[in-house]
Image 1 (cartoon, protein in one colour):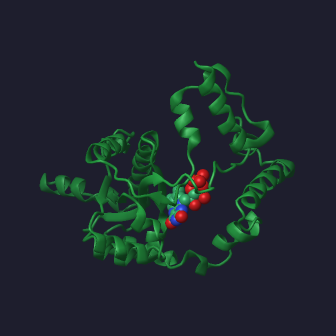
Image 2 (image 1 turned 90 degrees about the vertical axis):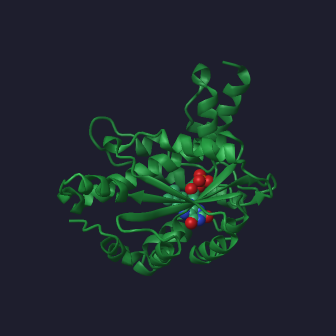
Length: 276
Ligand SMILES: Cc1cc2nc3c(=O)[nH]c(=O)nc-3n(C[C@H](O)[C@H](O)[C@H](O)COP(=O)(O)O)c2cc1C
C-alpha cells in the first residue's frame, strides 16, 4: 500500500480518536480512506450528480445485505422544486434540502411483499409484530448508508435528514406513500463547498464502545476524554462547545425535543404496522 493512503488514513484516525487512535500501517486501503473521510456536508456548490452516478449510488444501496432477501428499501427521488420546497419546510426549514443536487427519501416498504404474499393466498400474521417493522427499518438503514458511502466515494457529500419525521404525516401525504410504507429519513447529496469548515468529527474512543465477551461500562476517564475532544472540535468550529448541555440534553431532556416525533407510533398504526 502506498505511503500516501497510509498517511491520509492515519490523519483521519487521529481526527476521530485523538492521541489514542489506532495505527493503520499496512492495513490502510482506499475503501477505509473513504469510510473514515466521512463528515456530514451541509453546504453544497451548484453541481449536478449525473443520472449514471445516481444509478450507481442506488445500485450500491440495493447491494447491501437485506433481511431474508426481502429488499424492504424504496427510495423516492425528489426533483420537483415545489416538492423540495415543501420537504424543506417540513424538515424545519433546512436549506440543504433545496441546495443539494439530489434529494432522496428512504422508505421502509413492506407493501410489495405483502401484496405478493396475499396475491398467492398467504396470510401475513407476522407483519403485525414490532420485529417486522424493525427488520424493514434495519434494511433501509443498511441501504442508505451504502448509498452515502457510494456518493462520498464519487466526491460528493451527504446529509441524512431525520427531521422529515417531525412532520411525518405530511411527508406521507406529499409523497403519496401507501399503506405498509414508512419514510425513515431524507438524504441530501451534493458537491461539498470546500470553504465549509466542518471536519471529521471525533467519536467515542474504542475503549468506550468495544466490549469483550461481556458488556463492561466505560470508565469515567474514557468518557471524559471524549467530551474533551468533542468540545475542542466544537470550539474550533466556533460552535457552542458543551456537547452534553447543548446537544445531548437538548435532544433527550423533554418529549418536546422530539419536535412532533413523539406521536410516531400513531403514524405506524395508520400505515398498517401494528407493532405488537
Ligand atoms: C438518522 C440521521 C438523521 C439525521 N438528521 C439530520 C438532520 O435532519 N439535519 C442535519 O443537519 N443533520 C442530520 N444528521 C447528521 C448528524 O447530525 C451527523 O451525522 C452527526 O452530527 C455526526 O456528524 P458527522 O456525520 O459529520 O460525523 C442525521 C444523521 C442521521 C444518522
